[in-house]
Image 1 (cartoon, rainbow, N blue to C red):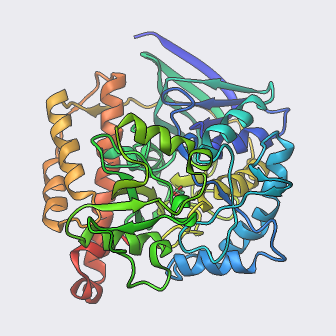
Image 2: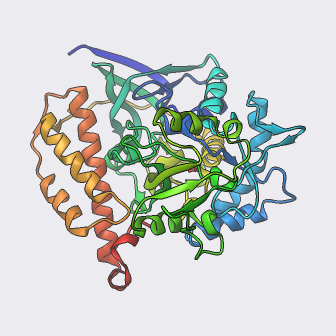
Length: 477
Ligand code: SIN
């Protein structure tokens, strides 16, 4: 197999908003390589609909801070939340400086609202296509010191004398070694491990495995968020919560409001809405008849409904896997517990989301903490010695079976028995030194799923009292 060797100051694994924010803010004197597993646009950031939450227009960040903490079930770390919302006040102005043009109504910003926000503070671009527009604009601004390589899979990190010094993987099908003075993980979450998800299918928890294998600490892995409203069609799409902020309500087949029991109605925190919808017998619809100018404000949704032959005033929805709050443990500047390794965005457990992320705080997190990582990164040159890599020897059939099994337990109402049997079945997979890109990719997915499964079991075992009090459908939140 041929080998490509690259030597850079900073390697950024991932190409979504967290990665691009770091790349935009690193000193231009550094030689930076950004790698994307598939096309750069296959990042979750590109799919973001609702927008970016910011208290830019408010007298202070206090209300945004309170909403974030309350949505998190008071499990977020207060000083991290303060950093997020306070530094997030200037995110809108910052992004405008990079060329992002937020939607307006006349001279004013057209700020929207989503679940668990006490007021309208979601800034958006192109209606419900915020991610696509923001990412296209920012990627065009990447300076010359940043090289972007697509179709690069990173399958392991290299560590020398206690410091991460680079990574190995594939560029297309060619084996790739990258020596780096520092490595930033911005690989996103875990949603692509299953089919019923709002995420890009390529986002499969790689960063968790890479970090774990060099000894970085992972935290709160069982904190997984389900979005209440994915379009209930064969290939799920997100139906943004901003639609409910604009007046849509969740109704049953006879038009009865299914969240009528909650003081915030259809705009209750998303974990509570997702659980109510999961328990509901029969199809739930988003009644959008009260949403004004829906074609103009939610063009992507209207187009998607048309594509599936659905009536956009009565949209069938059901919950699906959306966001991973847990991840690689980081300090407020994105440093992991291993020297030379940083993490930012969904792969990191930045402490700002607790048990339930507040809507539209994730793009904000990428921006605020991405800027911090760019300042904190230190580049050190160390010897780069690659150890022999092995991967699981799994056939396509076996891998599909395991993926199906993951889909059976990685749900809002998992059965512990199914998690245990997945762990048992994948405990002693045969390993091979004949490393191929496909086997590497499959191995990363299976290892990521095993990390999550083990964390759920550990959480359950370590809290006997809680376990007895819990119902099966509250494990992940
Ligand atoms: C949405 O638009 O409903 C999702 C936004 C988010 O997850 O922050």
